[in-house]
Length: 238
Image 1 (cartoon, rainbow, N blue to C red):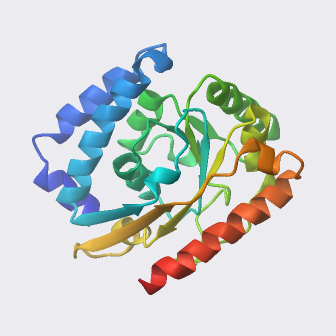
Image 2 (image 1 turned 135 degrees about the vertical axis):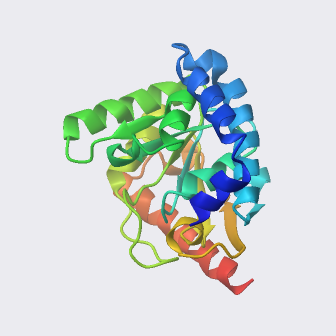
């Protein structure tokens, strides 16, 4: 219902948005056009969210590293999660998504435009190849968003296990890790209503490579999950 509302209220703009984003995705050198594509997608996403009566409240932007080449790890609540970051994150980024969403309208175009990756969770070799690609991109100065649960939690505002393997991209890139906490991001697309909703996002203090270099990926996953859980508990009280 909310997607229909977004399309209805932006009826004449949606084709233009899709065409511009699609055109960015056609460029072979995604690095050259990454910042430009992100700026347009950010502007379009902000309008789309506003049309859908969704308010994004973000906090902690000062915790994002000053230098590009970092990975954000966040709890996963649904398809709307990426749209939250596209509006709220002040720095360009790409993301990893499961292959099942690669043909979803708009998300498909955004994936191509930002040079993001889709992962086949049943194909270990393909997944490792994507992790290596992400690590290489991060070393070149590109930022990424990864959802370490791998799939959305069945219970709103609760997390499931964080997969240690999802942190290999960061360890290979030796880059800062930024834990991020989302609250109520499931509501815009999962709740069958068009009433106004508010989604909260908090960027937490980054972990430098020096802080986690001697830890196993499962230990890093546990630490990041613990920090996100603490932040979510506080966010739900305010």
